[in-house]
Amino acid sequence: MCERIYTNRKREAFMENERIWLSTPTMHGEEQVFIKEAFDTNWVAPLGKNVTEFENEMAHFVGVKAAAAMTAGTHALHLAVKLAGIKTDDIVICSDLTFAATVNPVSYENGTQVFVDSERDTWNMNPCALKIALEKYKDRVKAVVLVHLYGTPSKIDEIKALCDEYGVILIEDAAESLSATYKGKQTGSFGKYGAISFNGNKIITTSGGGMFLSDDEDAVQRVRFFSTQARESFPWYQHEEIGYNYRMSNIVAGIGRGQLLHIEEHRKLKENIYLRYKEGFKDLPVTMNPYEKCSVPNFWLSCMLINEDAMDNVNPEKIRLALEKENIEARPIWKPMHMQPVYKDNDFITNDDNVGEDIFRRGLCLPSDIKMTKAQQQKVIDIIKGLF
Ligand SMILES: *Cc1c(COP(=O)(O)O)cnc(C)c1O
Image (cartoon, rainbow, N blue to C red; front, side, top):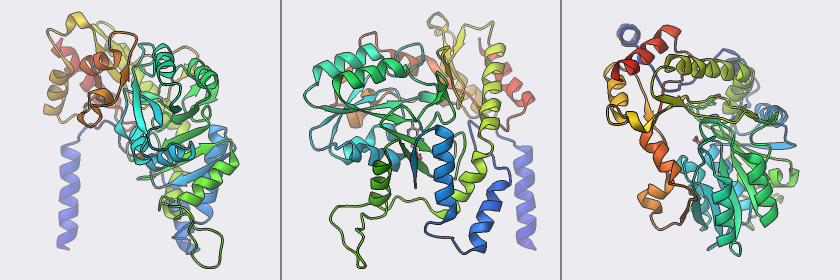
């Protein structure tokens, strides 16, 4: 009884004090149907039908031959780096403007990251800077890890052509960009290996999880092997290599199957949020995160960039704090990797005037939760307008 009253109070408090979030999970109900089936058949753990089906459905959706479900997108990236054969002192060229999870797996395999700056058309890896990096390290570079930041596809053709020219493996970090397309093809399907994430704030979520993608079915099989402790096929436990415990559970996969049914709906809602910001800011010295005409982003997060000449009056931190005061969550742009203390010794290549650093200084991620009402979004827009 006491507990019930407490729960009701908590709910009321939540309703009164409705926070506008950056991006939170949106569940629909089908998730529970798949979970229930797992319970009913006692396939609670470890693997089972939901895992197999989720992998098949996701491979089909992205347009790759096979997929392996992992406990995190980071784990999919780790095994991609491992399969690329990265060893001590090998160089992996990485996007600089990104979340640390894009680049940390290189260190797990004792490789060394070289960071490449962004361009201004998509905020992703600059192909010209990539060429400089490939030329500089051509004897040591084995792979490129390319992120599609905030759901905006990179200049994939140019980057893929350079990877082919220099004979390096392209790994796509499509953690933020699931359902975004480039020239009609899904991100995550361009690299030799691709990784997606179902972390809580991504466009679809399993509470936590990820997936490894590839057209190379043997590679996907290898990833399944490494993610289940590298157990050889003997009746006893035989190990000839070091493995990991990275495999997604059947319950978690059930959530994913339910979510996947709604991915296009999520993408469309995110796009509408982006368009409303764009319209709302049209008289301000502000632009939205840009994309190329040949691509369709998933608009995972809407981000604003303040024009240089307006930075004297208002800056991203001022906006963030003004929103926070109204219980609205906004977040700084990812801090570039070359500015991170942990990567202070790694090389950073730019052919321009430090684009990533500039975007970090002038940009801000805005609430992009698909449950946000139009009135709530208008409130966000009005607060921001009031600051200019
Ligand atoms: C979320 C994210 C990841 C990591 O995914 P997890 O599932 O949280 O491990 C990797 N790269 C980028 C760019 C991300 O945003």
